[in-house]
Image (cartoon, rainbow, N blue to C red; front, side, top):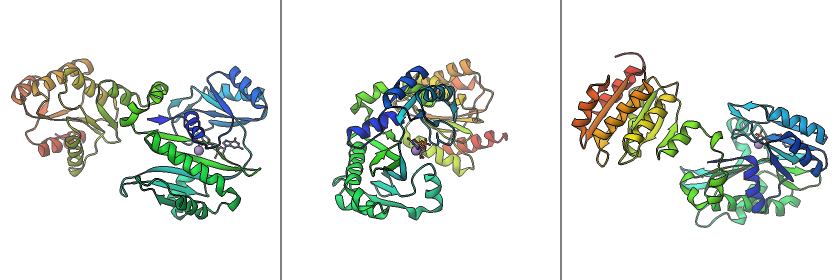
Length: 379
Ligand code: GDP
Ligand code: MN
């Protein structure tokens, strides 16, 4: 789950990271009032769950409350990378001397969180990572020991911040780590962490991703969740208890079990195709779930063929077949559908499906090969 800038910064502030004074609103008149309270010069910042808002015109500096109102009105009318701007954050304008990057994420290969820092922070950090990776200092954090002071020192020295700032840097780094850990985050990022003209560190931007499997431990976040700004299909999937992740390929996949879903994606790639999604309908999937899964897959305009791979254990083949049939009535797809159904009640399932125009397969290899061919218009 992605958090907005204003939500992330509020959490960072709770952990002792200094942030600018500010407030969020969806109303331009309100934006002017906030600017008046802040005393004039403010930044008006679109709150959308994508990066690069600055470059997309979603962040503007206003010299007066009137200007803040006009800019809020303009920014609230924008769509940035496909997402409508529904809220703006009005922050006291900061006096920026230096922009530092700070971020913590999970390094799966190292099986540890990694803390990254760079003196080349700001809007081009992706370019820095690609072209001059040596400018990003990394330390791995042992999850049992937590962030150690010597590691913070290594970061501070690595990015060459002045010694006067070290005490503040300690506070920010430990605060960010604590927020990351206690919120079960998979990313906690400050970009930029600025040094102001008067020598203060301050988080001007913030981003957090929370592990959705841990959301039950963070009820306060559940209520703040911005559903309409997440991918619509992923939200619908959640409603039906499906695990769906959209990918960029052209073969839609409906599979029961995460392991089998991964294997299905691998074998599609093996035969030269690309999966359009990861989708696990779970064990004991019923007709309603299957129908929802198929609807979600077919909403993706990139999908040229669908591969249904069901290994019936608890999941019953006949119920899956009924789900497919009822979804077909609803969405009436024009694209080829390949089904591999084995296990409990598979024969009954296949009998039900034989009436519909489905391509059946006995083995997973055969099904994947057929799906790849079908996605390329070859039968
Ligand atoms: P992003 O583009 O989505 O990453 O949004 P940021 O909040 O990081 O803002 C982008 C850039 O706008 C920052 O790197 C700063 O250079 C600039 N910026 C943001 N807030 C302020 C501010 O209060 N004052 C000034 N002068 N610049 C700001
Ligand atoms: Mn930023």
